[in-house]
Image (cartoon, rainbow, N blue to C red; front, side, top):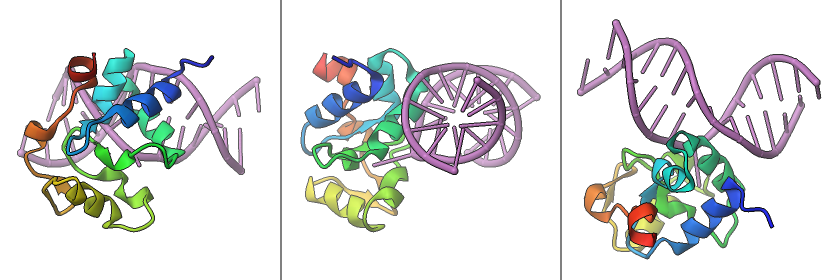
Length: 106
DNA sequence: CTGTTGACTGTCG
DNA sequence: GCGACAGCCAACA
């Protein structure tokens, strides 16, 4: 049993409701350390297909991880597919679509 | 084992 | 508002 940061990130990421998004810091904070956002990014760097990493963006609502996807607009396309408005690789109404695991998931 | 890097965030100037 | 520094921990060379 490895309740490490990594596994938590994967679980939370899977529990993100469609049409919603969260930030690395939000997940990191839910895990106990907001500064651990790097670990979240590193965990998603494994990019398991079971984890919708495209729903996880930085605190600015910017798709910083789009570069790690197969293409450059793939991540944006996926978000738009979730009915999320994305312009210039950044999420519109990010504040409204923001999903906080420490509040929503609980 | 040591050092660098990484899909980040918060604080200081 | 923006630039620079620090903190966090794990993986890779």
